[in-house]
Length: 192
Image (cartoon, rainbow, N blue to C red; front, side, top):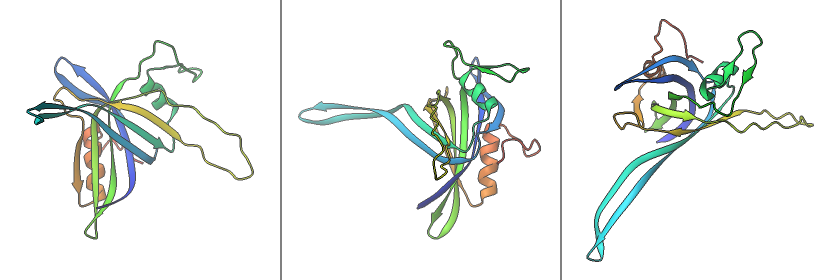
């Protein structure tokens, strides 16, 4: 399998009411440049009689890094838990602001035995954290600056941290990601 590209990063607010998990207010997060996902499981080994008697592997949390073409002011303020003044458009970041949990999805093309397939991934609960903000002066050659959102992958109530599915068409992969985020085909939201 050869991986080629990544597309259509979308998120939706993660809501928990008792034992019911839902998503709302889905939105696109610019255009994907690069997405890194690293699961951080815990591994426990019990040794007995000079050998391995038992092993356990459990997902604890993961790291995610999203490089995107743009993060709108609205998405940034929402994800980071900051306030926006609707009159002035100013975003205010306070020391007590907490990033909100969201569901996050995207898809990528891969080639399997010479045939294009599309692998769609949904992370049911992640928390993006405040990004590093770097700006460079323009020099002789222009260089684009992009946005990198770091975050933590969490488990949902059922213990699920990732859901993925491979599709024969790009349209089906995109529709699946949208359905996970609660974006309907009629709403037209979330697309790039």
